[in-house]
Length: 326
Image (cartoon, rainbow, N blue to C red; front, top):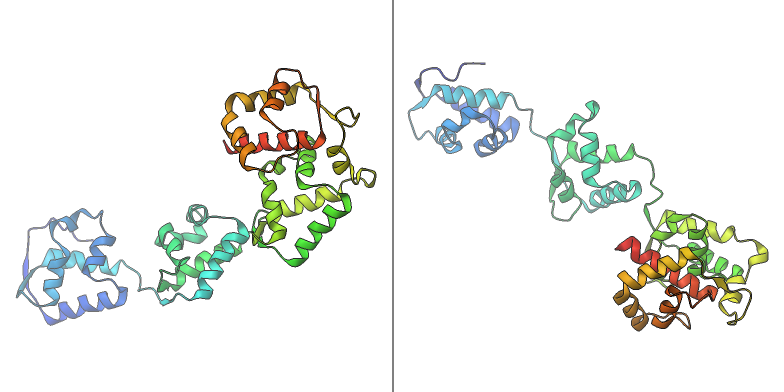
């Protein structure tokens, strides 16, 4: 590379010099402004501007700074040929979104992971923002190599169990079938699984499962759906109907849930730190019979030694959702 700190030398502008410059612009697809923007950190470019390069092309001056010209040509020759751009079609956008959902991998996570891999150096030629634009309808065209590099990178990743899938009629029918067969509501099922240590049920909203079957929600987390179906399958036949039976038990029934110290501490935490949320829930939600501020107080002060299974399941589920989303 030349030493661009040499004394300034002015040369007559020749047609060959301009032709060579135009050739590099056409080859790289970058005008003078794009060149300067690409090399923002190049200190020697601070000595002149892209408008000066434009003046060379327009032959506004008969002479030019040869050092500056040589630097511009050197930088142009350091750039690759211009990329092939293609129209960004609806199917390309949907394909990109589909891969993101299938793998449950964000564009940022993909870009950050792959740009560090030697075989995927092409990821250093574009930014996360580019991928985000491609995934919307804003992009009219895309760099073909960059787009397919992203899609190819996604295809190396496995399906994520947490991907969102469309709720089919078969899935709705399957869920309704097991609910009717076992006579266990989702709330009771969720509480049962959490008590057994299956903490993924903390992520599953009871209301959402209702929406799965009534059409209010069109997509569902694949893993959450599978967890519910598998939980239903694990219920022993002898416990079919127990959820309903327990919820209908009388005050003095031996089937009532005993309030242990762990549960009492949770309710104390609920009353102390989330009393407003609890009161709002009582006002705007459909709650099991007997759930009230008075019941919560009696549980926390030790006066309430047992509650119905339905009350226990509801309070346990409400507490877990409050704590996990707080």
